Length: 427
Image (cartoon, rainbow, N blue to C red; front, side):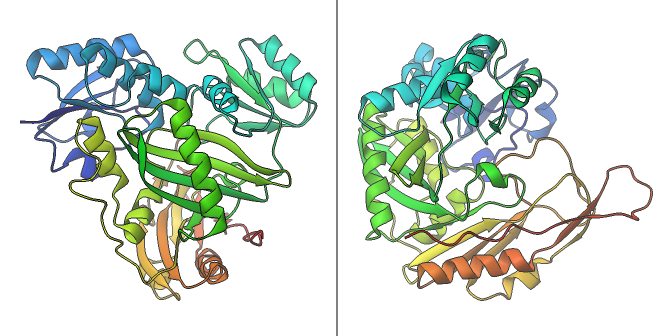
């Protein structure tokens, strides 16, 4: 009987497939206080004050292990990765250990290692106090990108244009906290195109890799509905980015697992941004499975249990007829949804392969909206790069969402959101 422990922060709602995965006979969860009720009956839940507290998570894992032997630790979401690596190391379990996970999650250490491996990055520096953040920013000159060393979903990442904006970011707790005491200061890139590259690694070798092109840079479009389209294996962009991915995986020493790499195309060439040892966020895994037949979540589970990444060999493509397959997240904003385009209306647009809505009229949207937040997702197929962009643009142009403030008795004023127009593809 296979018993896995899922390490999951309070802000994440695990995929139903993860909670009822066919390879897992018994699932236990370590999450944060006040969130045990979201898990179904039959799932053992231990709660901690913070998933970032690795010793607290380890103590919870020991309590679970005292009841049932643990076969693997799952951490498909960014915030849970360090604690999961710590538990794996102490309990001698399969999957990325604490050392490897640190290289993939501590952005300062990661960037240092990638730079030493010869990869091109934007100029960066680490800072361990407010004074050091200010000093590094002055050295680079305005504007600068500031971000916590640990984090995901573009949370607390900002472009600040002067000292006053930087002070406001620091005052809001953007970077330096007791559980996250290092910040990254970075020169911003002039992004022509932003790529993400998702891979599966087994025995130190990249067994599967796909490169996708974002419709627009992620940082400036949070809440507007992100999107990307996958590049064919002979596309020059894929060949160049996949090579960077292979070098990054080797530099950080991942033996088995899944990866998500971010790369910028700039006037000075490709620049590596970050790489994670987890599946990509939002609908990226669903898009990859729809085109290539590879389930990134399954590969994550299998490698976390010490199993081969693929049951036999790499799966065959499920949509070989779609040379380009793209997806977009539908824009989301806080408040109570009063109007939203229907699934049926979106499904009738040219090239649409799948529509999945996550929210509907009457739902209240609250809490942090991060880079992969969306009201739903639409997947399209196309023969050419321009056609896939045009079809995704048509989806975003048709989509409409209106909200009113939560608790408002009437709705004389409503908020309307349409996705920003797509940038022209770069050559």
